Length: 159
Image (cartoon, rainbow, N blue to C red; front, top):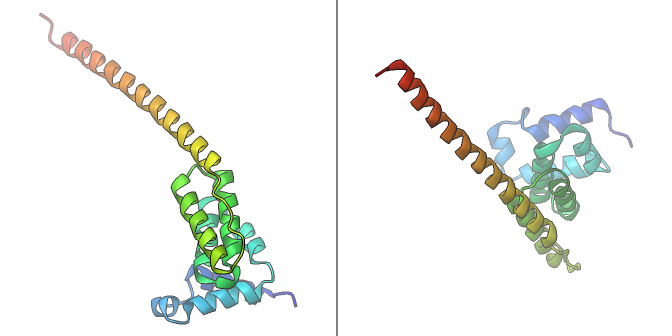
């Protein structure tokens, strides 16, 4: 049963919140509505997310689905973790999502995944090295600016 264009528009509109009032988006049935739209309208919701969103928007959508739809929670967290590792250096968000995935797996009696601490440490050290380099460059630029200000000031007020 392939979805038609109207289903696609309803999915996008409801998901982005453009066609629902604030009460409808936050009401008691909002999580069920999103779960229905994501789980029933499309047999493979991950594919739809991949087509319509990129970067941080894709991660946000996957985490949204994981938090709102228990049937897709584990798959959405796994895809979000893959996206975080492949395209970001956000170790805090990765660790938070990985912890939630582990909790969801434990709640279902599944073998919990492991947090990729090697990736976390690698990204943290690379980020620190880049920050140190940028701070050193900024310090050099400030020193040069001070020297230039002194030179210009001396030229404006000859002795």
